[in-house]
Image (tube, rainbow, N blue to C red; front, side):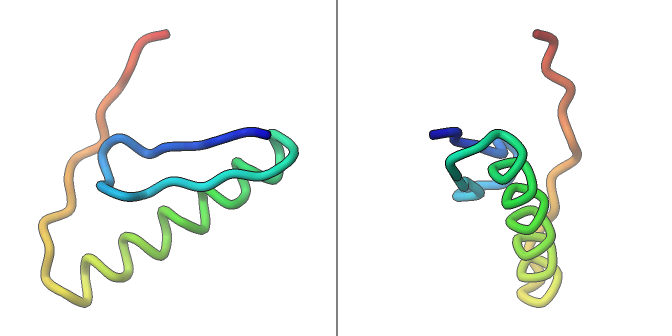
Length: 52
């Protein structure tokens, strides 16, 4: 099981059985989160760079 969390976007999390599917889901979650934020007038945080 792979879990993806987007730290900049509160509540933006997803998971799936493969890394590929989990990342695909993450892109969808990000898109939906941003669409919702724009519709509701929320502030959209700037992306952060996290060094591994």
